[in-house]
Length: 216
Image (cartoon, rainbow, N blue to C red; front, side, top):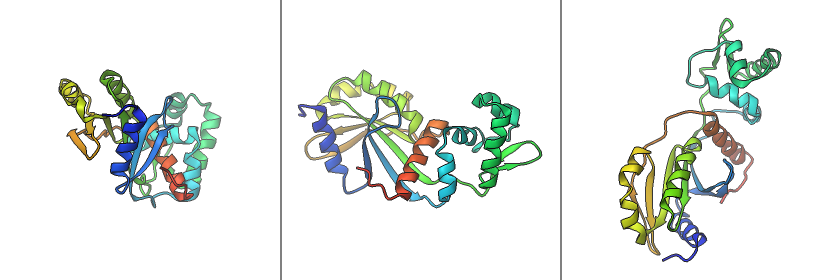
């Protein structure tokens, strides 16, 4: 049906183009994700200074340890980030100055007025035949996404359906594509875990959107 993987990618994008925005060969991770789709409802929860601060890897690491989690001490944050306490204090002071973090008597929390931008990140791993490799990479993609899919040609339906239980166990979705349609065969579960990699991917998207970077 598709001679090359790029043909599958192009057809998938052609059939989805009018609905959403995409990044091809997205560099959220080593080896890249074939396609990332992003859907935005609001990006107004952070101002430009806050976004720039969270683009810093160490600052974002601190934020990820506190966001939607219980308060922590500077000692805990230093150990988790492997940063000296003097450096950590400077990081925290910067985040406090920007109203991202609050100091509640030596216990640090995320400012309750801060919420992360409402962006949904969906990753698609495209493969013509190698379903095992596709599943493995789709599992890795979960670290960076809210939803993760494998996308294969429709004529691989019988092969794919043999792995239904594994797809469901791993919360991975399956989409099949032919020349005329995209069909969702297995619906993925939302990945609720909040980690550094997922927050980093969303900060990158917010930055690109704020700076009017066109992504296709």
